[in-house]
Image 1 (cartoon, rainbow, N blue to C red):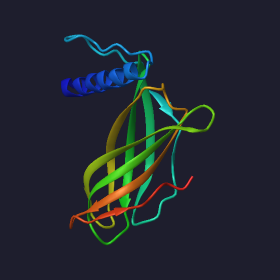
Image 2: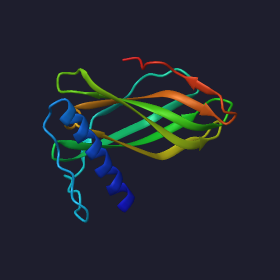
Image 3: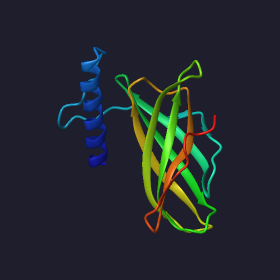
Image 4: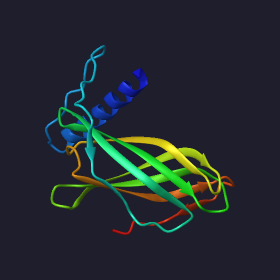
Length: 160
C-alpha cells in the first residue's frame, strides 16, 4: 500500500507543478507521514469502443476517488485474444468525457500481461490521475498490442 500512496503523491506533485506553470489552482500534497484522504469510490459510466484486430476489451469498468481537485480513476479490464499469437502487453486508451459530452482528456496506460491465443485475461487493473475532476463518462479502447515475438500492432484511433 505504501508504494501506491507514494505514486499517488508523486503524480499529485507533478500535476501541481504543471498547474502552477499555467496559473491554475493547485492541489495540496500530503506531508510525509500523512495519509492521502480519498472519497469513497464512485462508479463512472464506461463504454468500450468498437475495435479492429484479434485482441479486444470484453469489459471495462471505472470508478473515481477524489481529493483536493484531483481524481484517482481506477479501471478494471477484461481482455480477450482471439488471434493466433500470444500477447505480452496491451496499451489501452481512455477517453475522458466532460458533462457536455466532449473529450477533455485522453490517457494511455500499458498492461504488461501475457494472453495466449483463445484466452482471456481478467483483473487487469490500471489507474490515472485526473486534474479536471471526475469524468462524466469514459471510453476504453485498445491502442496497441505487443506480441510474444516482439512485433507491435497499432490499431489507430478508436471509432466513436
